[in-house]
Image (cartoon, rainbow, N blue to C red; front, top):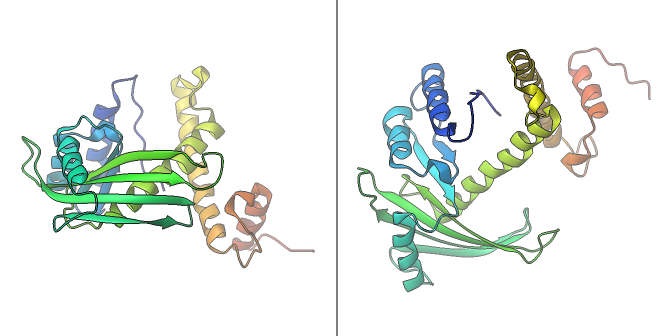
Length: 245
């Protein structure tokens, strides 16, 4: 569930905006409020990992496709040397039936990044889609974290959950609120967008609650939940709906 927002001026300004947002998050919720702070490859910096531990009291987790990072290059050398894993390299493979993906994960700890006083754990994830429009497509990415005891399967899962939020919340919000269009750039429209965002988040939270009770509601998949059904179920909770069917 999104809990804060920080507008920024243009491309290249995301990191400073994120830093302001995280500082405000720290003031509002306090140190240690979350266990992990997860970001994409843009946040693969020493400063991010240091701030997570020192400032936020949590571990940083990064998902990236960049192979040229120093720590990724070092880990890749180990993974290629020991493809089946060894005492210091965890190797797992399996089928993710929920996402219809086959996966392999290699993970190792005790990796240092020059200038960072904390050890890192790096995982390489190879996934192949088994169904859908991407059937047969293989994706390779890396997960980097300061949580050196985190199991390989958990590293993959955290990265997957982060991009589920990206796809099912951020992108859906952009589409519904037209946030990428030029006409939303003035201050009045930004204020209106914030109201729309709050409303959208409320609907998404309630949609999740409906999904958790889909068997009771006789629903097979969450994307079949209509706004009409959401309205009906929401009004029931307020005692303002009379079912005449």
